[in-house]
Image (cartoon, rainbow, N blue to C red; front, side, top):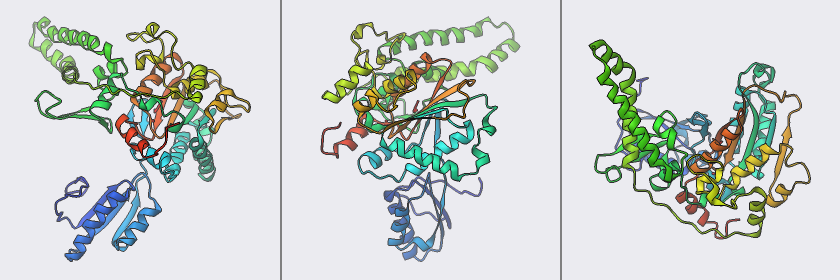
Length: 450
């Protein structure tokens, strides 16, 4: 298709490819470039004539070109950039899906990704118009927003004008950007929502869950897309794990009742209508339900957190730890702390709630900003009409967020009706990988996106 003979996964153990025209699509990662350079160098030693093109996504770093030149293959390849920007993971969640972004920023202090993130904000402006209010919480968020404003000014004025977006049915009223290092506690806590536990126990990669034969009770490997298109998953993904199986049991009864409808049809034409209109949907739900029911072996990871004076002060101010955990409803949640069994609400999400509750936050003398001890700002656009139809609130996590935080923000979005929350993230923070990356810091730790 489109002249492509075959698609290969880039691996060190790749077989010898006989095709004469090769295109490598890769992240700007030196480890990947090392594999590519080894294969090109091997072809050159064997005097095999081929043409090579390397497409970097979502951006190209100068260090990548330097590496190719050092390996002696810079002149043998053509280089292009595929600017994918944010990838839609669900109807309310977008992500860069770059696992290395957290360590790049907050461990190695590498700012190479800043322009790509800023460009994604410029693209959002072109689609939804100027933001009414912009809040930045953290040093990187502030830098990225400043760069986004510069990029907007340098772009075609007509493409990003308010007039072009004035008649949009949906506009982004508020943008909230938050650095991951503002809240390291939340991604280190045990996740007890259904999707959070799945991610901790099995790992969710690019929106997919892959279960091997051992995890799927010997029924072979399965690959499941986890988003709201799966109606069963959409019902339980943000639920506390103790309530999930009652929901699954109830849905199983509904599906069985749907199957039983076939007995009500007396004619062949009626039965055909049932198969055409309802049976396929029931089968999809049944398949999804089977996957959820088989997936019972969840390991909950426990983590001890030291409460420092700074954290205690923020916790008290924002109400992170409910006074009466037993009053938090798990089946019909009445507080976002339900995601941790009623014992803790993520600081990042409570900060976002606080910003939306007190829109004039971060003005000069502000207690929260002093407690956070980071660069916080609030920018109000005086040219925007504050009364918009179908306003959106976009939350952008710089450095990733957890599925528990996503669940908490979905809960908050329901409380904010008619405003809607839409999330962006540079990646989904995973408990195990987050621990691994932060261990290298060698000192005590001080990811929708929604």
